[in-house]
Length: 356
Image (tube, rainbow, N blue to C red; front, side, top):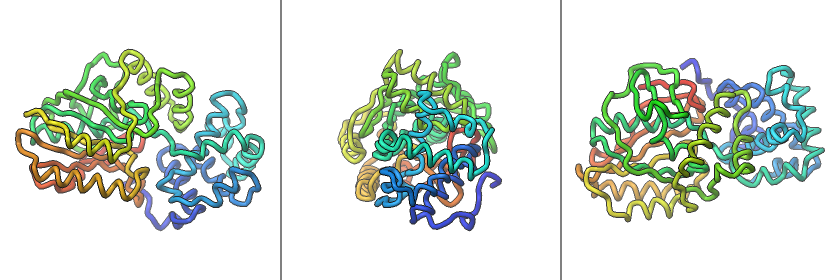
């Protein structure tokens, strides 16, 4: 596809430098050149004698899966949002594009705000993006034609619960509509390919879990969330504001819980007849440990063996294909064999979607 680049253009993602370069290219491919160049400027920190520089250079985890460059990018964006230091503002606006100039700004910012920026490396970015819910709704449309129209959604890594309020969003998926028309959250990606099935979908329950939930009604928490938004995407900021409005009206149900424990509890609960239990997540799997991933997969497959037409089970995921930079929508469901089906792919922030 024209939105993909070959893996030949990417350095070894297993190294710190390679992971930084991969993230930079990912941002650039997604239409955020300033964000990409700021991520790439972190290569200049690998020999910088500051706390931030040393920690990045000696990173012990997987740089790509940990989204290391985006952690610091969030802290740097926060300097602009809080008007602490606005030197990167023209970079986000595209007024400064020379990589060496951007490198110099980032290095000086890290030297100046080393203590303030260091804690931003402690945890992964909060990857809230309401526009990714197109994938969940499209998958529910597809599943509705096979399992029936009623669903209970259970989201892993829900963060602030932005996608755990999708029953209140309005969707236009290639002309297929869903949700309340008057919603302040309008999800309408540029649609490529055929539309999903135009069948009823009823979300009878929706909740999520996160190890560190974000309270959208808290100003400082919401500001931190905005710091992770790539500044080139003004529409993303508008969607966060719409999500804040909806959360203030009615807070999403988010449990502070480990993903493995959440899934174990979910599968142990009684399931009402005629409702499909759905496990769903977007850009979360990479942040879950391999051990927990294996536990969740085994638990879902075991539960799938006892799923019935009256009590079906489904697993809906929107995660990154690291070879193409695309976000891919996969679905598994039981009864039905539990095979993984690729339904669609899309832009990381919901700008476009292609039904496959």
